[in-house]
Length: 136
Ligand code: HEC
Image (cartoon, rainbow, N blue to C red; front, side):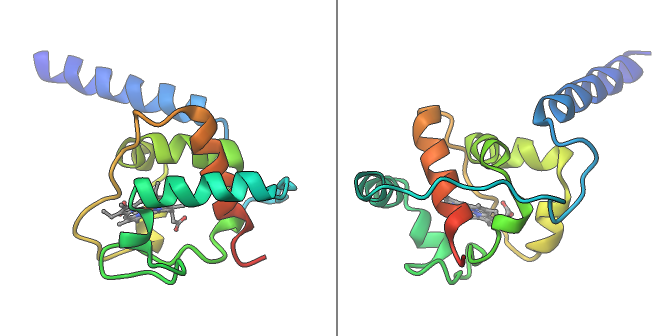
């Protein structure tokens, strides 16, 4: 009895989260890529500080070419929208519960990407736009 309540609670959490994700059934790549607003020079500078402070390049490489601890981030924009990516950066492990395809296309990493729950949404959106524009 107790067990089924726990399972039900977990299921509800997953479903609620999937609904918030707003992307409907997992389909990749996104059918119609959204246009991304290019970064201004000032925003690009902000991104560089964010990438430095949050050690993104330590795992994803100085040119986002990927390392042993993180995949390349070139041309991943096809799988994402700004709002999905912003939520992913907030808590990757949790996001991947409802989007297992992310782990499937990035197999073999022992440690998941860390959460950035302390990062303001504005900064996460900026990073998201920056990732979306890579490789275009
Ligand atoms: C400790 C290493 C590490 C750090 C630091 C890190 N990541 Fe990641 N990242 C990963 C791994 C590993 C994955 C693959 C998914 C997984 O297993 O968590 C990933 C996946 C991603 C993806 C999705 C790739 C795809 O296939 O769609 C994006 C985008 C991303 N990271 C951006 C960032 C940004 C931006 C930062 C800095 C704020 C960052 N990462 C910091 C390890 C890291």
